[in-house]
Amino acid sequence: MVILVVMAVLALVVAGSIRPVRDEAEIATLRVETTRAFYTAESGAFVVMQGVMGNATMPTEGSTLDLNGQTVVFVQIPDETPVAVVEGISGDAVRRIELTTE
Image 1 (tube, helix red, strand yellow):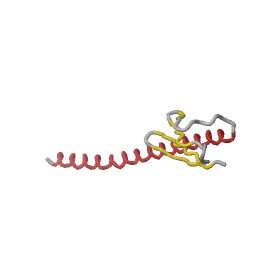
Image 2 (cartoon, rainbow, N blue to C red; image 1 turned 30 degrees about the vertical axis):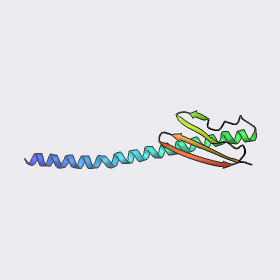
Image 3 (tube, rainbow, N blue to C red; image 1 turned 90 degrees about the horizontal axis):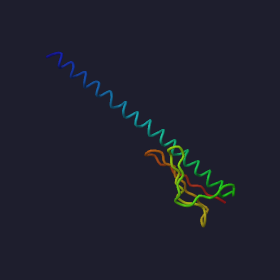
Image 4 (tube, one colour; image 1 turned 120 degrees about the vertical axis):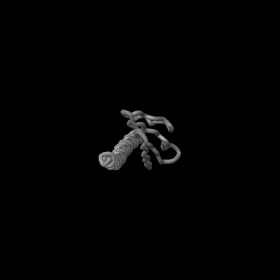
């Protein structure tokens, strides 16, 4: 009987120690995805800047660009207003960059 009680207590200790590790792994994954989404949005902003300077073709509003599993969405392109909005998406993370052109 004592062995069963000890085994039950050990099972609870192990189960209790696994949950925080899993939560930390999920947080680390989200941090990586958020960083990738930011750099993806930054790359999209660079494409828009090149288009504004005339060094590249300006993307169309609503178009997307795939970069190694991450996606750039050109939400707003500077046409009538000098503001561009670019989103970077990586997994569940989305980062948005707004830039004003002259």
